[in-house]
Image (cartoon, rainbow, N blue to C red):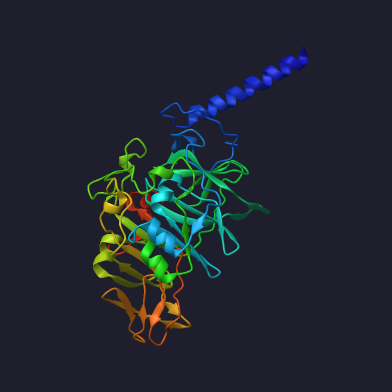
Length: 381
C-alpha cells in the first residue's frame, strides 16, 4: 500500500510540475508539451518562450547527402542564396530554400562538427560549432528545431541534455546548459553561382533528402514577408518592441567588438558597394554584389527580387591594412591594385591567391537583431 501511495505521489508531483511549466510557457495553440528539460535552470523567464509546434514538427536534416558543382548547378538556379562555409580547405553550401523547411542541420566539415542554422522569421543565418566546454565538462551536441519561439526567433534544443537555445545568439536559455554559448563559425550568404566560382570542388546539399519537405524545396511559405512595409507576425512578436532606428525588415550584417556590436544595413551597403570601416580596434571591409535573390519574397523563390550579397572581412593582410573600391563586379585594393571577389579571394594582381579572413558575422532582419542587441551601433547613424 505504501509503495502504491508513493507511486501515486510521484505521479502527482510530476503532473503538477509539468502543469506549472505549461502555465509559465506561452502556448497559444495548446500544443502538447513533451520535454524532459530541467526548467528550474534558466537565464530567461519561461513566459518569454512560446510553444508553437509539437516536437519533431521539422523534418530532420542530420548528416545529409551532398552533390558537386555539375549536379548542383542543375538542381538549383544560379542566383539562389546559400550559407557558404569553408573549413580546412573543404567547402559546403546550404541553400536557404532547403533550410527554410528544416531550420538546421547537424553536420561536419573539415573534421569539425558544425551546425548551420536558418530562422526564416528573423532571416537569421548562423553557423555554430557543435562542440562545447561548459562548467568544466565537454559536450558534442546534436540539435533539433524545438517548435518554440522567443521574440519570433527559433529556439533550438540539444538532444543530449534537452536544453533550449536561442538560434540568433547561440545562448543556452533553459536547462542544464543555460548560460552556455556556442562558438560562431565564419560563414557567408552568397549565390550558388559565386559559391562554385570560389569553390569549384565544393559540395552543396542534395535536394534528394527523402524527407517530407522535399517537394516544397524552392517555395516560400512566407510570401512577401520581407517587403519594405512588412512587420514580424504579431502572434510571434510584440510590435511594441520594434526599434524605430531601422525598418523591421531591413537586412543587416554585424561585427562584434569587445563590448558590443556594430551593424550595417543592406540599404546603405547596396549604395556604397564597398565599406571600409573600423570598429573597436578592428579594421574591416564589407563587399556588396548584386545577383542573389530573397527567399522570403515571391512564392516561387526563383522569381523573387534580387537583394544582393554582403560579406565582411578583416582588411588586415600580412601586417598591411588594405582599403578597397568596387569596379564593375570586382573589388580593387588601393594599395596594390589587385582584384578580389565577393568571397574575399584575390583573383588577379600582385596578391593573387591570397584571401581575406572573414570576420564572424551573420545576416538578420533589423527587428530581430536589435531586439537581442539593442545596444548595437548602426553604421551611418
